[in-house]
Amino acid sequence: MAAPRGGQRSRFTVMVLVMICLTLVTIDSKANGGGVLGTVRSAARDVFVPAQSGLGQVTQPVAEFADGLVNAGDLKAESRRLRDENGRLRSKVLQAADAQRQLDALLDLNKLEVAKDIPRVAARVVNTAPSNVQLTVEIDRGTNAGVATGMPVVVGSGLVGRIASASGERAIVRLITDPDVNVSARLAPSGTLTSVKGNGAGALLRAQEIKPDELVKEGDAVVTSAIGGNYPDSIPIGTVVKAEAVAGVSYQRVEIEPVIDFGHLEFVNVLIRRGPSAAEDGLADAGTTTTTTTTTTTTVPTTTTVPSP
Image 1: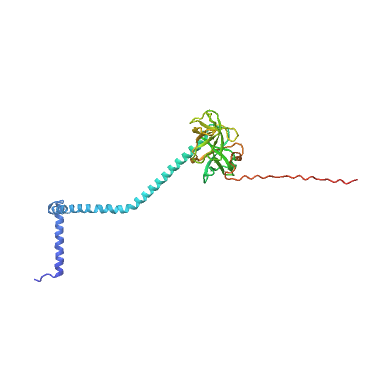
Image 2 (image 1 turned 60 degrees about the vertical axis):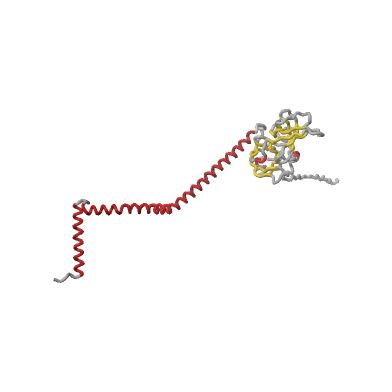
């Protein structure tokens, strides 16, 4: 009998393997997962489960890192958004605080208890003098708002100065600390009349011509006097901080601390009243030139000739 050829042998081997597989599947199904195949399958699973667990532990950090890379852009964008939002909120808080401060300053203007019957124009300080030669500030109200040269300028706590010059939308205020300014004043406790003179930026004011026999005490209030008509009566100027007799001088040296912090002026009130001109109080040179125009009218006599009859 001849031996089977190579091709027939391969087909025979395949048929045998298929029959074996069918037999094993039939046996396994009848055993409901038990039997030899079930045991082999369980053993194989027990062998591969630790490997699968280990592989999961190894690959989990890698997966989380990959997720982090994917989400990093979103986190940066969110961080920028939160920083921008925080900046906007801080800006609003600062703006609200500044608005409240300005409101408080405006309300303080109305705290002056004197000269309430005089109309007022509120103004903002927009500029200060470039040097200590002329102690002035510029405000954002002028003749268009009724402001004119010579008008007193006040805040809620007391006297600031007078209008030295004015244009349509701006005015210059000469401060009472200017050495060229004299303010008619009186000592509130005794009624002693005096003249308060500026002594320069940051320096104390000085009361003039107070006789040695006049009683002046530290802490005495100094207010304006209506004498001369430059200022309404009783506007606070300052407080006496020093009073002493000086040998060989016929008047006391009386120094006064102003009630106003001139370095922090922001809003002022202009008292809309007429008084002596700025030139009478040494104010005419505060940034403007006053020009006087004189018009001369010449009358020429007319001669009429009547013809003789």
